Image 1 (cartoon, helix red, strand yellow):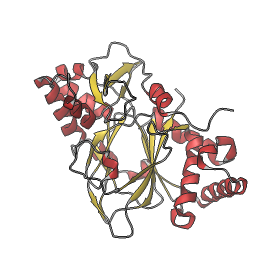
Image 2 (tube, rainbow, N blue to C red):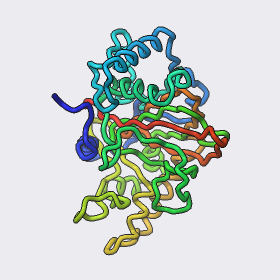
Image 3 (spheres, rainbow, N blue to C red):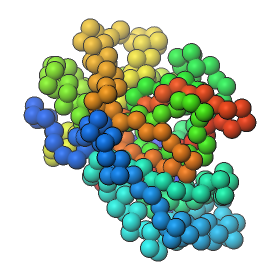
Amino acid sequence: MDPAFQSFAAQALHYFRREHEPPSREPIVGPAAWRGAELAKHPETWTRELAPSEVEELEAARRAVRKRGLALGEIRREDFPLPTLAPVIEGWADEIQNGRGFLLLRGLPVARWGDEDSALVYWGLGQHLGRPGAQNPEGDLLGHVTDMREEATNPHVRRYRTRGEIRFHCDLADAVGLLCLRSARTGGASRITSSVSVYNAILARRPALADRLFEPFLLDSRDEERAGSRPYLPVPPCRYARGRLATFWHSDYFRSVTRHAGVAPFTAQERELLDLYEELAGSQELRLDMHFQPGDVQLISNHTVVHARTAYRDDPGSERHLLRLWLSLDR
């Protein structure tokens, strides 16, 4: 029997299996080329409130899993039956893969279920969306995005473990989900931007820089490489095929790689590109901000959307806590 999840390495290999052909020099069009300023006026087009009957179906699946005593990593799609919700979830997966590349679900009763059972339901939901995967070489299946009291000013810590700002990036999976268990007292806004729209803006302003996006940058492994391996690997941010652009962006990890011996400093063109990408992704015209409520699930494509987070403050005893899920989708 196949495992209920993919290894970190298998998931990353699946994610980077991106087709490529000579890119068009014309702007890329389609639903993934959205602009945040426009979508902010119409949240009803990208927000989905779960109906009471859908919540009850998730509740029934939760009870079935609990009755069997299955641990989270043992739960497969067939163990978490969703007879009427499953076709709806297929539509959500299609929206992530072929539409805008994101949606926001609302209404999971996380306070009633508690953290552990909320995680089980979230995992079961993920099994219907795609195939979950480990988020690091140690095999962690759900990332706890909360303040672990690590030093936010240290440029090499995993910033999701701090209350600090996180710059625009993608994760190493086709899609990422964030379930809000508890929100921050202030701040902690999720910022998402269409990487297709960022590319189009660079193409219009600095076409020579757009070409550089199809050539490799070195990606810092941040001390998670295997013993004996180099502490970085070459990754071309953009791949283009059949009219579609797929982007992997991680400015912090591209920038920090120069700390390693033997890595050449950035050229002036590369520094300009890194700065311009961040400027455009964070612009009020392109970005879309979301403020999570407990029970929200944000689902986004790591091929057509880059995401970031603002710094935040917590209430003592009620710290902001999100659960992160990585998913591979059929392509």
